[in-house]
Length: 128
Length: 128
Image (cartoon, rainbow over all chains, first blue to last red; front, side, top):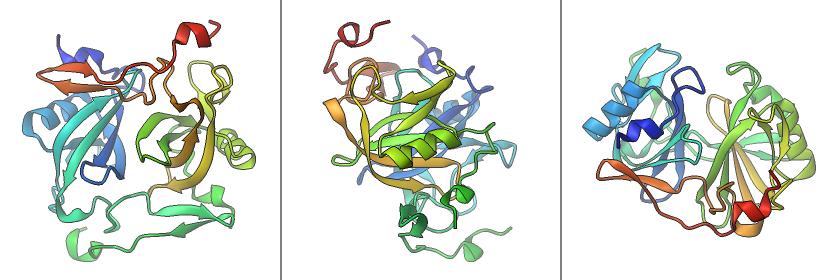
């Protein structure tokens, strides 16, 4: 059976939510979107591709920074509208702010507190 | 500063993606949606509330099954449109199929393989 038949791209206009998890630590790195082509390229190439809503195009994660994500395993939720990818995060940082995870702020005392320092300087990595 | 100002409910029609993670094991339990009221009730009550798109109403997780989620910490991503909740999953199972996580299927040999057995029988727990 085609595994794509179990993925529900219809609920959110052709997109599913995709979560990248560090395969070694289990830490959630980032959340983005995939369309069918992004998931297909991810499975075919072994490197994670998303659909970027801001860029309006397929986004090979790490295409600028070099911090690509190598797929270790792929999971799907009960409804079929969320894909979870366990990955090896090359360069050790998934977030465009230079931090290892996009989830670096936590609620403490009624406000958001930043917990992790950047591992790279975004100004040195992104051309624009 | 009001922590809600950092949460971007505008990008997806008043909803943000919410991820529940088992605080003890780090395992991702489920992914759902929250509107502002759901997040507010979650923070006020200390128990996770989602916005159910299928029910079209606020959904106090565990309201039928008793498997509520007690909030341990709240995190937000760099874009402010994904909220991550580290929780204590009461009853040990988050999924409506009775499994501890909604992510119980993984891709192997070109098909989805079920990895975890149910911890409860949904027919015994849900009235409809």
